[in-house]
Image (cartoon, rainbow, N blue to C red; front, side, top):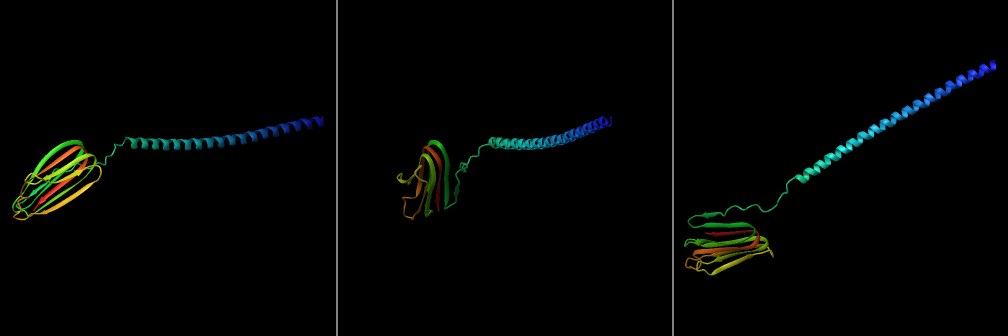
Amino acid sequence: MKKSLFIIAAMVVAGFMLQAGQVKAQSSDEKMLKEIEKAIKVQEEEISKQEALVRTYERDIDMRWAMPEISYDFPTPPPPFIYSSEKSFKLSLRKKFDGESITKKTSFTIDKDQKRLKLNAHGSFKEGLLSVKFSLPSGKVFKEIIFDPSADVDWSQSISIEEDSSIYKGQWNVEIKAVKAKGTYVVDISGY
């Protein structure tokens, strides 16, 4: 009987030991599950942060596309400036063309007191052409300047007017003719 008691006691102790091992194994499994859950939670937080960054980036891209297009065209030139005194004057003609075809005439007068005339013309055209024609008081063409896409033009001429020279004194005519012109020009005329 001692032997059977010993066997029963050994079985009870073994059962407790087995149950304790299972509890220990179960508690280590629970610890591992908690660590896995914690790691999953950290990963979910990181994913949430990444998604927030992507949304911010996409919003910024959408805002950039929503911005209006900026144009770098020449500004609209001011109206012509005319300065006049007893012995001097200045006439400035300027315009930006966007494909127009026009013909325009204007005039200026060289008085008997004026000793010099200075003519300037400059401009640049991408398409079409522009002609600026200066005519003497007699009607004879003094100079014609052509603006076209082949080159930018910068022309200047200064004329000394002697007292007995009547060829330059009187009313000059300026004719501006544009044909499907795209570009900008400036003409300055000064007498003094």
